[in-house]
Amino acid sequence: MPYVNIKITREGATAAQKAELIRGVTRLLVEVLDKSPATTFVVIDEVAMEDWGIGGLPVEDYRASLRAQSK
Image 1 (cartoon, rainbow, N blue to C red):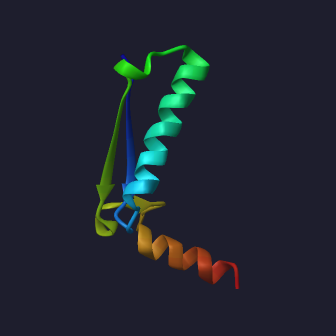
Image 2 (image 1 turned 60 degrees about the vertical axis):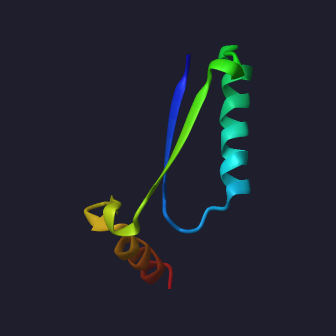
């Protein structure tokens, strides 16, 4: 009984995009591990941008630093 928890930042992922993530993850578990879709659980949690950090920075600051580096 696989349980997959996907965490994404709250940036407007559509219902269709979330459905595709659920289908894709379920399909992958069927193909790779021969798991039953009927007992595969996929949960998507959306996290506020200010609650997500990367490299010691809030995600928005981290992304800004990457943009500045690429210029």
